Image 1 (cartoon, helix red, strand yellow):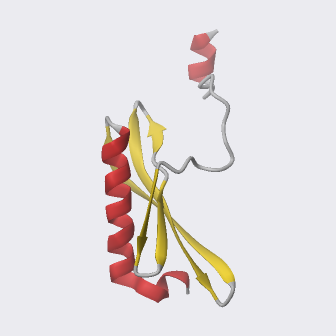
Image 2: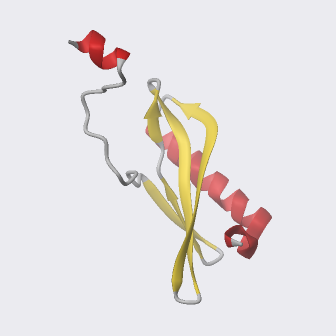
Length: 95
């Protein structure tokens, strides 16, 4: 049966609609949530940048190609990439 799961994409784990937040940081009024996910046996760099603008919560999701064997390394890079995106784009991120 495991052969068919791999063949058709079944991992045996239930898929969640919301990514699991593994780390969080504040930077210049923005919130960065690290949401790395398992991909081919490693953790893929991924996150969400959010900020309340005019009473509405705005979000920007990002995924990078970087992968790590350990979750903590992926979390740290996700937070670092989030800070970099904020520094480069600031408020223009949501326009």
